[in-house]
Image (cartoon, rainbow, N blue to C red):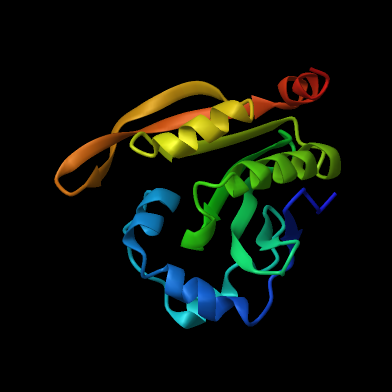
Length: 177
């Protein structure tokens, strides 16, 4: 359940905070992973990230070959009564970006969300300029559900937030293809 072909969903380790703190100095990473201010976290904030919560599951992404920390993946904002949650994923290690690790992380977390958490829907939002992520989500089966116009301001420009989602029935039928 936690292992893919090249990566695994792993628990938070104390030593992770130092490395993730450095990722917070990468403006491109910060601006793609969140719509909030591109503001680096303090080391203390990084140490508390991924703390257990009743409406979130949070994993660090590590390579199987050499146990290198490359990013994180989470289902947050879980509404248990509605069986839905929101996906968040980030590949902070620049050596592993654009090489399919994000797609593999999405496959792993969807399997976990639908089989282990028994969710019926996983949604996400992504900034329209993050076209690589949008393509990855589409390949994973996410459907365009809408957009929030001019919701993100960056460098004097406004961008839409793209809303996407995938249902258990869509995900499970794609496995049989």
